[in-house]
Length: 224
Image (cartoon, rainbow, N blue to C red; front, side):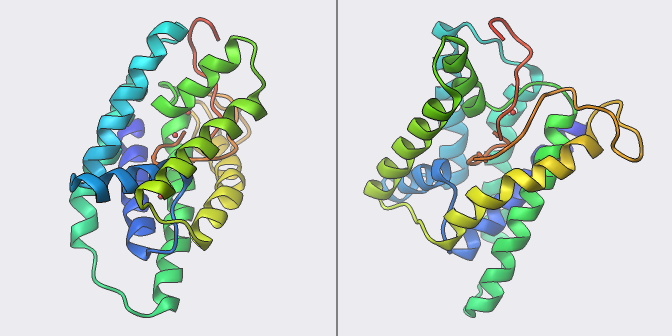
């Protein structure tokens, strides 16, 4: 239940970030670009890309957890349900508040989701699978996110201040939230999380769009 709640929060937060129209995390720039080119709702694109990325886990021999599979579906579905129901905002200040609220909520939702210890998101699993084969975390993460960002921009995805704020802000927020919501954590957040560290991304559109999470797998979290 904790995992599902965290993913619903992440999907709702991503809807706020998308609706603010001030820029998205790298993976979500790609999702939005594909959505704009095809007419497919962005939440559906998030689901399809999550499932596609999971296929890339097979040659990397990374095992998905239950949370991984839930991540691939729930966040995108929530985005498609919530986004159309948000009120129109014309004032820049209001959109800024929506953006900040979305980033904070996404970080908290990521902490709740990863704290359940049921596996990282599809995109983070791809990164950790490549790292397990000897590549540098910095090189793999930068390469993946730069690639999806450039492709997303080419397809018409939005970048802006939100892209920067998400990239810079999500890591510290998850760092604070994760210990407090981890399975077995005390009321003061003194226990160590079941799923290792978080420093973002991205994220994208999973607590993945936007964390670096260890997957309990051989060889070895995301969501906007």
